[in-house]
Image (cartoon, rainbow, N blue to C red; front, side, top):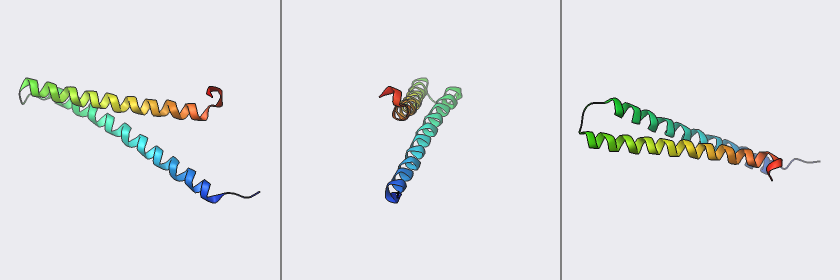
Length: 84
């Protein structure tokens, strides 16, 4: 029995890259939601520009967090053989 080291390294690199990507997407979504919350508390600027910026930040944050959720569910689907 021999170990295919190139395949092992490939799996390790892809796993680390995927984990980093999911972490970056999650952090970006949380940052956008936090910025939307901060903008909702600010009182400077016109009402319409604040509302538009708040809506865009909040929508972007929700989309990114939803994407993370879908990636996690896809990973579970790949790992659990019952779903195949």
